[in-house]
Image 1 (tube, helix red, strand yellow):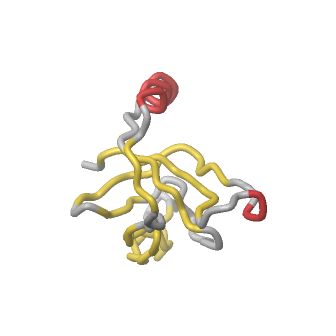
Image 2 (cartoon, helix red, strand yellow):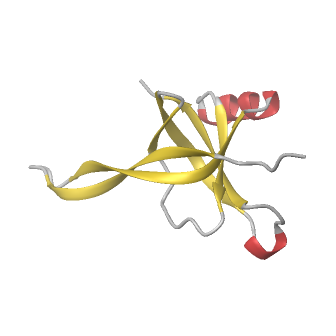
Length: 112
């Protein structure tokens, strides 16, 4: 039996580099490699639910490894040679109660 293993995903983290003329933040994206991220197609129920609730079409669900401290809320990510946008709040479980290596999940839609 093979063990599950994720892929490396590039998380484009936002860093505030200044303010514009209207005092709104200006961001720069900083690429961060996150290893061992599971990528699974979104279920039909997830696609319909998210489309009805947010108007966004979930394509994949990412399972984030335990111990990851990055902010996954409204971030761009790159994998499979394409760029994706996370949406919705990441769902996190209690690390000690989850037997595998992943305890957080977030949905992504196609970007661009």
